[in-house]
Amino acid sequence: MGVICLSFAVTHLSVYPPQQRDTCAAVFRAVSAARVLSFLLGCAIYLSGTFAASHLYQHSALIRKLYPEQSGIQSLAKPEKILLENTNLIYALSPTIERGTVRVTFFCNQMALQHTLTMPNKGDVLVDEKYLFEVGGHTKGYKQIKGITDSWIVADDIETGFGNNIPLWLFGMMY
Image (cartoon, rainbow, N blue to C red):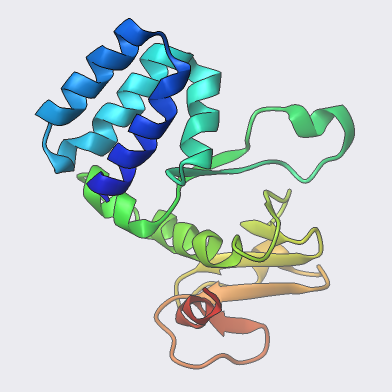
């Protein structure tokens, strides 16, 4: 992962003035591979500003932004939820792990390759502006998505699906 981040950073450093580019390149050579990701995030904030850095993170496959399910000028608003791109980043960067965040991150990582994801008013993720998913553990109920057509529960810790329950592991086959 560090090699990927390093190659991305070196490729995109050409947009910065030579002095900043040389400084960043020297630091990249000095830091260990485990710290490259953390340094890249900090360097991007320093050089680009917060909004541009957020855009850089998303296009470098470090984060995923879920925007509200709105159209028009409201779709330009800030993201409703920001997730790390994949679960490996969560385990590498966070001292405490929220299991629900890992579930939603995994689901979004697997679905985003071929689908458009947005943040709905109810539920966790709206896929292709039609299918609503609520992600949770094996005891997750239909309370949050009751009465909504095309809605499913994506449950962790179950082996087989039934009704509108789909096992979370099954989405791993979509990648």
